[in-house]
Image 1 (tube, one colour):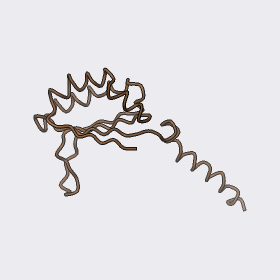
Image 2 (cartoon, helix red, strand yellow; image 1 turned 90 degrees about the vertical axis):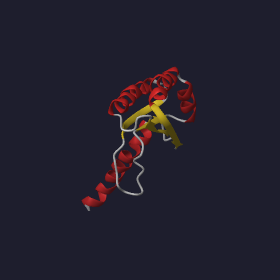
Image 3 (cartoon, one colour; image 1 turned 120 degrees about the vertical axis):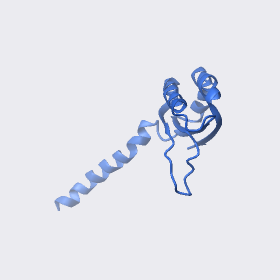
Amino acid sequence: MKSTRAFPAIAALLALWLALPVLANGGGDTLEHIVIVWLKEPGNHIARERIIEASEVLTAIPGVVALKSGRVVASERPIVDSSFDVALIITLENEQALQAYLTHPLHLTLVEETLKPLVERIQVYDFR
């Protein structure tokens, strides 16, 4: 009998644990802004690190919930595209935050001063 009484408490704790990421991100309206970067000099370690380090400034933009950035992980698997150099995932509160982010001076400065001099191609994916 004791195990049947514990079930509702365990279920409630599990539901709360599963809901925490949604609650922390403002109720689930967040969106992901993914930026894939190909360098003018593919594989240039210094350029990769410069982009990754410079991108940290994006966390100061209002509406940015999280930032993850990193270098490509090479793969032989045919389904994996490992032709790029750097990827960024910027989590934003909502679509209004994305629009504000795109025109924010910190973002524009990063694009002009860091990305444009180093980057050959950029591909962006936005999703909710």
